[in-house]
Length: 481
Image (tube, rainbow, N blue to C red; front, side, top):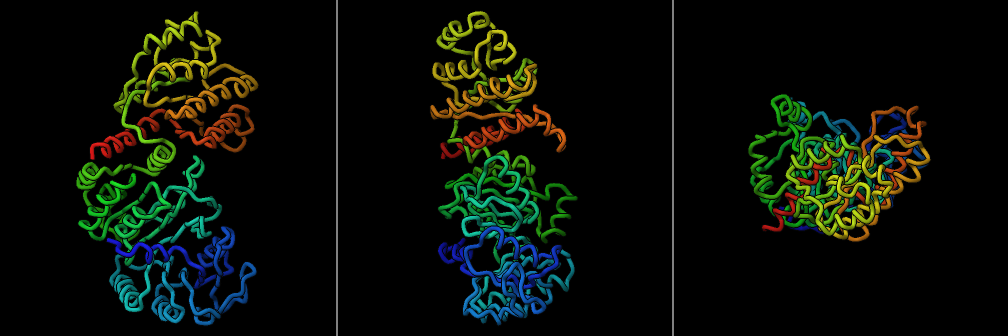
C-alpha cells in the first residue's frame, strides 16, 4: 500500500509543467495538452518543449527540457515517440522531475516483444532515477483545483468525486457526461498500462485523499490481485467505491489486453470480491454515472419504502413495477395521510394510491406538489420519487408555469425538510432542430434547474431504481459493519 500519502499527493500539485513534444499541429497530443493547461488556467508555469518552435499559445518554447531556465520542473507530459523516452528521462533527472505522464503509447499494449521490453526498460530507468511514471498510453490527470486537464471544456470548479480510469477516452466521457448531471470532481486520473503507478496505489490514494468523498473507477485488469483486494477492503470502509469492470467476455478480455496490456480476470471472482467488500459493481458507463449521481446527492439511506408522484396512469404502473423489481416497497397511504387527502382532494381522495397518478390529480385540480408535501409530512418514506414527464395534454404556458414549476417546488420542499428526493426526467432522442420545440426546450430547462438545486436526476425509472438499489445496498453493508 501507499505509505507516504503526502509524497504521493505532491505529484499532483505541480508548480510547473513541461509538454515535451509540444506542437502547432492541431491534431497532435503536443498541441492539445498544451492547450488544456492554458485553457483550464493551470496555476503553475508552463514550458512547451520543441526544438522547431519559438512559441505556442504565446508561450516561449524550449529546444529541450534541459534548456528550461529553472532547476526544477515538477511535471512532464511526454508526447514524443516511445523510442525517445529513455533520453527524456535523463533530461528529467537534470530538472528534478517528480512525475512523468506518458501520453506516449505503442508499448506493451501491442503485445509485441520489442515494445514490451522497451516499456520495462523505461520503468527500470525511471526507478533508478527516482522518477514516477503515469502510464504509458494514458491521458493523465484532471485536477480542476490546480488547472490540470486531459480534455477540452471540462468543469473548472472542483467537487467530491475522485476517479481512476485505465481508459483515457472513458475518463473524458465520464467527466463530461457526469458533469451535465451536476457532478464535480476532486481528481480523475487516467493511468493506461500502469507500468509504475497502479490501480491499487491510486485506490489507496483516493481512499485517503481528503478532497475525495466518493471513488469511481474503470478497470480492465489488476497487476497484483492480493494487494488490490487489501486496498479495496481499506477503501470501501471509508468511502463508497464504484467500479466499472471491463473485459468481462472473451472478446472484451482480448481487447482489454490490446488496449492497456491488462489481464481481465474472472467476473465470478470480481462479483464475489465486490459482495464481500461492499464494492458497487456496474456494467457500463451510463450505470457508472447513475451511481455517482446517487452517491453525490443523496444522504445515506438504508430503508426501501418510497412514494412515487407524477406521470400518467401508464407511467405510474411502469414506475411501480421497476422499483418493486429492484426490491423497493411502495406502502399504502396511512389513514392520517388519507384524511389529509380527503380535505385537499375531496373528489378523488379515495381513488388515489401510491404511486400518485398525475392524470387523477388533474381531475381533482389539486396541485401535485401540495399533496406530495402533505403526504411526506404525515407518513414516513425513505425516498420520494418525482416523475416529470411530457405525457400530459397541456400547452407550453401551462406546462412551464404550472406543471413543471409545481413539481420543482414540491421536490425542493421535500429536500428542504431533509428528506431524500429523486427526480426522473425522461428526454427524447432529439436533434438540434427539435430543441426549438417548446416541449424539449422546456424539459431541458426544468432538468437543468432541478440539477442546480442538488437533486439527483435520472433519465428513466429503471435507471433510477437500479442505481438506488445498489446505493441502499452499500449503506446497509456499511451499517452492518
